[in-house]
Image 1 (cartoon, helix red, strand yellow):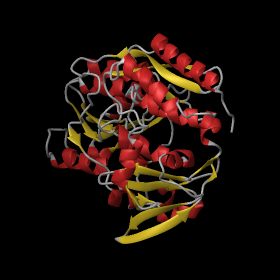
Image 2: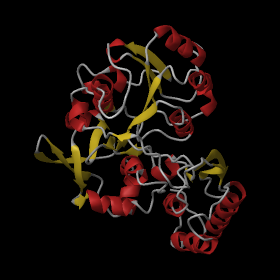
Image 3: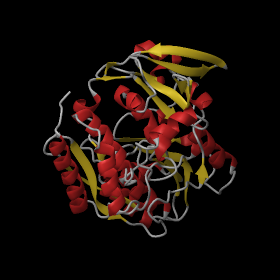
Length: 391
């Protein structure tokens, strides 16, 4: 572990503050400059190595409430070993959706606690390390932080090499001892264990489509705001036009951003033929950054509704990330360089889908898509909203 002198640490935190003020459009939106400077001094007072400085910087940056401003998760801070499990917050708690082979039999289990710390206690402890852009931020980012032994140790949740996971599965309480593994080890996804999983739950490519005759719908899963050479958005539009289907389902649930302009051909087409299609946009907790821009532009079209989870990104948000490196620790910091404003949304305000539908674990483990099941009722039974009926 690389040690640092007091002078080196002082130079780094001064550089951190200087660069944030140069690049970030408003670093002191949620904390005053005076309080930020005091926090820098307080959190680094007892620091003498790169690892502890990294944790201190995470705590400091969390106060900016900007998900695009963060410490690069390097080996110098977190090491090469992690707890190889990934939980995800669903409708009523955190569920194991990815793990190493060691824990694969427990996929779908609900997290009750770690080392006898309850979930509420864990959320409270981690809240100091996570930028709270909106109401979903803590529950969205917590699972990735739980994987880091260094963070668990810094919060006094972990004291030994192993930890004890308290889980609940099929109404049974389980206690599992687990040790960190090489972070490069492959993890098994719950989706790999589910027989007969529906297509809409699989992320097959940057984007793809299929016709759903039973819903009189053209389904378009748009996972990345990046173009493809083998299938352009113009070609997707042509396929939509040829289909003669009345409902268009645009699935943004897995889209974390990129270039919001990639979808322009489809948006232009829908504006031109705004009375021809009923548009249903699916949203998820992962929907973020440029995908939020697409979501808002689509939602402003007539005959459009949205179904799904509240995204962890906001309409009015910081973005267009730049980076810099601190001179002594060589820690890399990312920060926003621009603010994107959308009419009707203040900074910190979330986009709320027309129908908030949270994923149910029982649907997931049986290969069912909660949002698509709900959408089918809307389309086929005409519940809640008028959409072109099924054939």
